[in-house]
Amino acid sequence: MPSMFLTGAAAASGIALINSIGNLGGYVGPFIVGWIKQSTDSFEMALYFLAACAALSAIINVFHHPDP
Image (cartoon, rainbow, N blue to C red; front, top):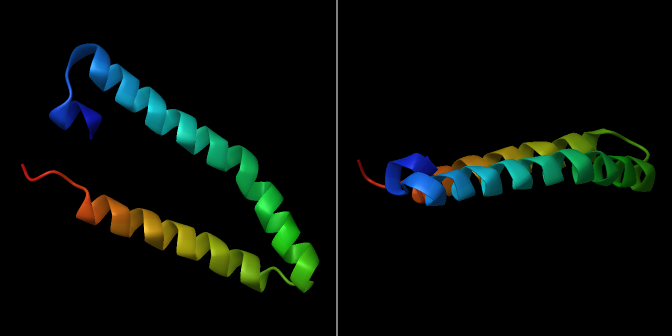
């Protein structure tokens, strides 16, 4: 998506930012899931949390997608 409205170095920076945020989520996500599981003694709420994060990401993508 960054290459749709950015060019050159700005597009590379946008892609790098998206990748960095994804890597941060991959690092922090398991800690949050573990904390929720430990707090509730069940994976159910942790899976609801992951589903809510996926839904929020989809909603952000739909509303912030530039018109072609």
